[in-house]
Image 1 (spheres, each protein chain N blue to C red):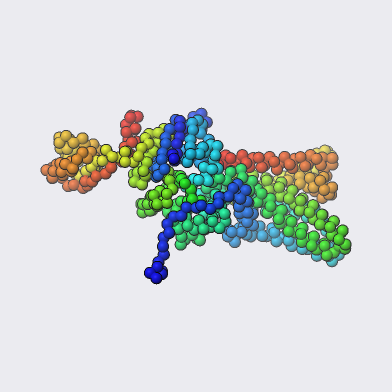
Image 2 (cartoon, each protein chain N blue to C red; image 1 turned 60 degrees about the vertical axis):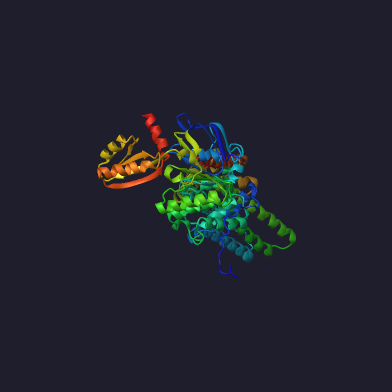
Length: 304
Length: 286
C-alpha cells in the first residue's frame, strides 16, 4: 500500500503566496525524509496530509484515505509531532500524554497504560510524573514524540524533531526515530531542513523547494554513484588542486576542502602521492557520500 | 530460576483495543474542562478563585437556609439567588474561561488536539459546555442546600413538592445565567493568549456595560428605560427571568419587551457560539 501519494497538489494562500505548486509524489511505507529549506512548503504539506488544510487543487491520499473527506479517520491513524513548542508547562508528562491518548479515543485505562509505555520507549519513564515545564529541550522533544505514539499510529509525521537539540540529543532522537521505523513497524515521515541528518536514517527522500518537487527517490539511488573524497590540507590548497587537475582528476573546491569523485580505489593512492610529493601537511582525507545538499546547490547554480 | 531479577524489554506492542468515537472524546474533553474550571488536576493557585466563589455561594445558601429555618422569612427566592450573586458569576467566568481556553492557546497545545480525530468545533463546544456546567453546578449546589433547609421547614408533601419545583426553576435560571455569561466569556478568552489579559477583558466587558445601562435607565424616555437592560449581560438575563418566570427581580423594568429580552439573549448565545466555532476552525488551520 502506498503510504502517501499526492497528485498535482497545489496550495496557495490568497492570490500571492504559493506554498505548494503542482506537487506529485508517491512514497512507500518506511522512513521517509521530507527535506527542504525553511518556507519550502513542508509544514503546509503536513497540514494537508492531516486534513487540517484543504488543498487549493490536486489530490492527496494518506494510508489509502483521502484527508480532505476522511480527516477524522486519517488523524486516528496518524501521529503528529509539531515543530513549535506545544506542551503545557504545568502538567506532568504522564497526565498530558494520557489525556491526549483519550483525545485519540483510547479508553481511560488503555490511555494510561499506553502513555506509560510511550514515555518508556522515548526514555522518560523515570521522569514521567514531573511537570513538563521543568524538562530540558531534549526531554520536551521526547514528550512530543511520546504523545504522537500513544495511540499506536500507522504513520508518524515528525516536523523538525531535532529542533533545538544539541548534537548528542540529535543523535539520540534520530536513533529513536530509526528504531520506531524499523523495530516498531510504524512508518515515519521526518521533515527537516538538515539533509545530512535525515539521509542517515531514511529509506526514501523527498526534496521540495518553493513548493515544487525537487527529487523523490530511494536513498540508495540518490547517493550510490556520487561518493566523493574530501581532502583538506593546512596550506597549499591551490597547489594541490593544480596537481590533482594535472592528474586528470575532476577536482572541485568546497570552502577550504577539495572534493574528488571516488572512481576506484586508485583515487586514494593518487591523492596521497600528490600530497606527499608536494610535501603538504594533510589535514583530512575521508570518503563521504555525496550529500543530498548538492541537490540544492545544483538548483541554485541553475538559477544563477 | 535464572529469570529472577531480570527485567525483560518486551519491546513495542501494537494496540488492538477499542478506539472510541466522537461522543467519548467530547465527553472526555468536557470532563477534563469541568475539572479544570475548579482547578482540579492543577496547582494550588488554580484552586483559590473557583473555590472561593463556590465557598461564598455555599455560605450564602447556608445563611439563607438558616434565616428561613429560624424566622420563616424568605430573603431570596431560588430565582433571585443567581441574579443577586451575579457578580460571582462574572468573577468565576473571568478566572475559569481563560484557564479553559487561553492557556491552551498560550502553550500552543492546540495542534496536538487538532491532529487527532477531535473536531475543532467539538473542542470549542466542550470547553463552553464545561464552563456552563461548572457555573450551573455551583449555583445548583447552593439551591439544593436552600431546598433541603426549606424541606424541613414547610409542612406537607404537597408544599415540599412545590418547593422542589421552585428549586428546579432556580436551577434552570442559573443555567440561563451560565449560558449567557459563559458563551461571552469563552469567546472572549478564546481570542486571547494571556490569561491575565483575558480575565481583565472579561471583567471589563461585564462591568463596563453597567454604567451604559445606568445612563439608559434614567433617560426621560420609558422606552429607553425599558430597553436599557439589553446592553448589559446581567440585566439582560434579569429581563429574561422577569418575563419567563414572571419574577420581579427589580433588575430592570422590561415593560412589554419581555420577548425581545429573550430573543436578544438567545441571539447573543447563538452568536457567541457561532463565532467561537469559527474561531477554532481558523485556529486549526493556522
